[in-house]
Structures are given as C-alpha cells and as structure tokens.
Length: 269
Image (cartoon, rainbow, N blue to C red; front, side, top):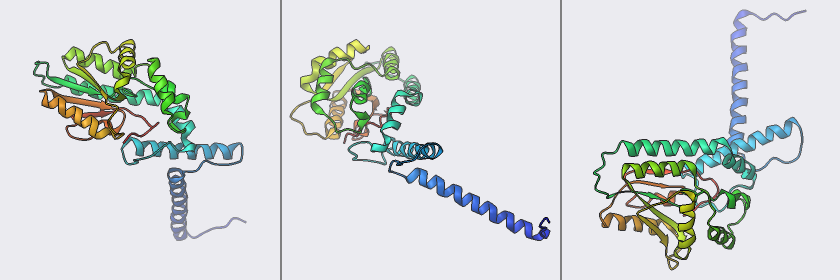
C-alpha cells in the first residue's frame, strides 16, 4: 500500500532533503581542499576517488604558492609529486605561460616609449628565460632536496632550453626598442656557460647580464632589487620585470609592472 502524505507536509520534507544533500557536498569539497596526506590502500573506484581528492588538494596548494600566500617552503608535498609532474609536462603549464607572455606583450605594445634607448625590461634566467625542467624531472620535480653540485653540473652543460613563451616575448620587446637586462641568481663564475646557453637557446643580444657575486649571501631580494636600483641610477627606466619567483619581483624598485611565470617546483627567498 502506497504511503500518502498530506500536501502541506511535502514542502518541509523537500527542504530537509536539500539541506542534507548540500551539507554532504560542502563537507566533501572542504575535505578535498584541506586534505594534505596521500590516500593509502584500496583499489578500483575508491582509489580513483582518493586520487581526485589528492589532485584537488595539490591544485589548491599550487594556487597558494603562485599567489605568494604559501611561503618559505622547502619542498613540494610528497603527495603532489605526480600532480606537479603532470602539470609541468601538460598543456596547463603551457597555457599558463602563454597567458603571462600575452599580457606582458600587450602591456609593452601599449606603452608610450620615448625611443631613447633607456627603457629596460628585466628578466630572470632560471625557469624564466630558460627552463630547468630537464633537471627537475630528474630530481623529483621539487620533492627531493636541492642538489647544488648536480645543478652546477647542469648549468655547466649549458643545455637548458628556452621557455618558448618568454623567448617569444623577448623578440617582441627587442622589436619595440626595449632593452633587455638579465639579472640572475647564478654565480659570477657561471657567466661563460650562462652566455653560451642563452645564445644557443635563442637570446642573441641583451643590454646587460648580471650574475650574483659569490661573496653575497643566499637572500635574493636585496641582491636583485639592488641591481635594479643600479639600473635606475644609470638612467634606465624599468618598464617591465619578469621572473618565476616572487623574490625576483619584490623589493624597490620593482619596475613599472611585474609578471610572474608559474613555477610550483621550488621556492627562493
């Protein structure tokens, strides 16, 4: 026998059902964002569900890194190694770089340039002009401790490819008459392989290439902001500044506008 409910009882019941469904969905979404540990055990549909939770958590972590809300981290979360690998080798990284380069080009093309050869654009080198993805693919995409000896060997080989979107922007800036200045955290004794690598990657000319003196400490911000100040003192107007780390971009003078290339693999203070 079918159960019949009075019509005036149906509305409260429907409201109760909607509240329960909404609360369950909200709880699941919160768990996806806040979960920081990898799922353990299980196969089939359960494993797929846990993988989705991990991916969502890692995407939120990457957003925190790119917006500079997560700072002073030493390595990527172990659970995010696969996520970062997929991101760096996938279409999303390429699209994200393209958006940054496109906006930078549109900004530069809209400038009222004086044409006196004193407008400058500052680029970082590592993971901005050049990509060190071959090195990081071999060292866990930031999940393993930084190996200074291995990285110096990598730099000495001078084989890092250009980040294509940044290389394209570089060509547009030169065509506009904007001078290019590279300010890198590489040490001064690495000048020769750095010059060789930049040229082989397609960066054939620049106004200045500034490398970090070996005597300076590890902090990047005082060094890079100090070098930008030297440019300003020499009469240059820094119309743009691009890097993959926030430490490439902060500290006065920053330049008229800054652009950050995505990089979830490491943090430099």
